[in-house]
Every structure is written in structure tokens, then in C-alpha cells.
Figure: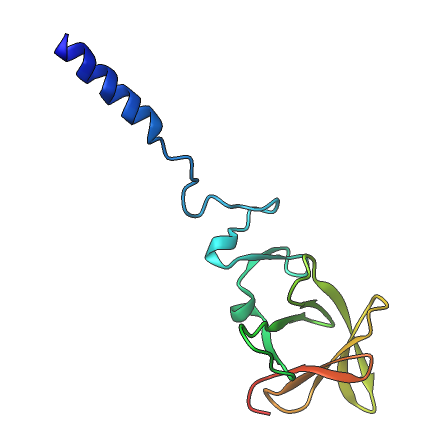
Length: 137
């Protein structure tokens, strides 16, 4: 009788403690990118990338209390894409030359414009208002 009670208790406890969490790295998105490892799908590169490695990191001009939410620009040839905090899909950018200076403008009507202001310095404006820039400006 003791064995039966002990076995029943063991099975009951084992059944209640089943781990329903998924394994680390098992959070692949529709493109196969693992978000928990920092990967995001880039339509421009047609691959999973880490934005801070493959893109230009742009910090907000207006600092707010709490976490700093960076924007990222990924450029390739004469095309680009802009990853903004809170957006689930990147904004496509197209290269344009204005007075000999390359700028990257949103190809939709969102009003974003990325301009290189130095060898490693960039500014991101929305409808003419500076929103983000590279660190050290």
C-alpha cells in the first residue's frame, strides 16, 4: 500500500511540475530570425541581421526619462531601410543627391530623411525636424 501511495504522489508531483516554457532561441519569427538573440529580418539584405552590427545607430535628440530607444538605418548601394522604435516593419529609403550631398529619403510619405554630416556622423529628420543623430555630434 505504501508503494502505491508513494508512486501516486510521485506521478502527481511530476505531472504538476511540467515546464511549459519554450527553450531559449525557440522564438523564430516568420523569416526564421531569433529575436531573443537580437536578430531582425532585413528585407533589403533578405537576411536576419543584428541592427547594431549591420546598421547605423541613431540616438534620440530629445532625451526622455527611462530607456533610450535608438533608431537604426541599414544602407546598401542606393537603397536603405529605417528601423524605428515601435515599428514592426522598416521604412524603405531611397538615395538622392541634393547639391552634391547624398541624402536618404523615405520612399513612402512618412517624411523621414537621413543625411550624412561627416565621415561617421548622421542626422535623421522627420518633416524637417531633427529627431535622431549619431552619438558625438
